[in-house]
Amino acid sequence: MRADNTAHLRSAAQRRSALARDRAEAALTELQAGNDPITVAGLARASGVARSWIYTQPDLLERIHRSHDLAPKRPRSSAPPAASDASWQRRLELAHTRIAELTSENKQLRHQLALVHGQLRSERVSPSKTPSTTHNRSSEAARTD
Image 1 (cartoon, rainbow, N blue to C red):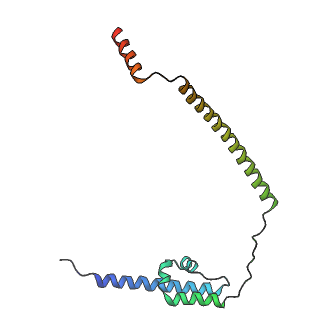
Image 2 (image 1 turned 135 degrees about the horizontal axis):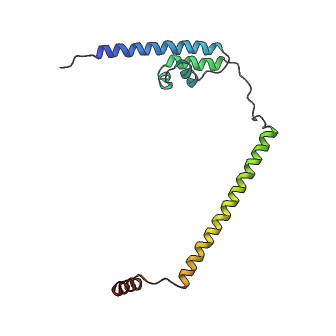
Image 3 (image 1 turned 120 degrees about the vertical axis):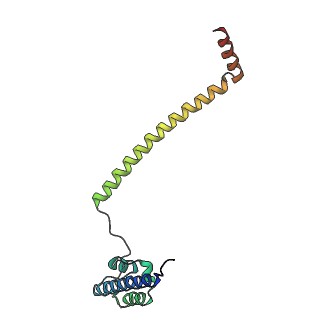
């Protein structure tokens, strides 16, 4: 019969949970000292705990939401920053290169398609010998050997 180790397991789980809570609270306090908005993912990353665990802690979630309410509102820019001329030039070069590659590939595929159409047309015009005729001739050749 096995010994009942549930008390030890429960104790270890409680210690892990307490350590996680301490790390999360310390990280939250540190994040609140900064001016950046606090998110669950940011807190999880800073404290080394799982996001899913933070969602099970209503008081931590409340502190995160409160920090959003207290944080100064920053106006958001509606337009992304403009790309530089060098960036646009590089994009155009890449686009032209890709167009040239696709044009070449299309030319090759059209050529292959034309060859296959030609083969199909020649088979329709002069069908190859039927399998029975081919079989009979190979049988006759075998007999003459």
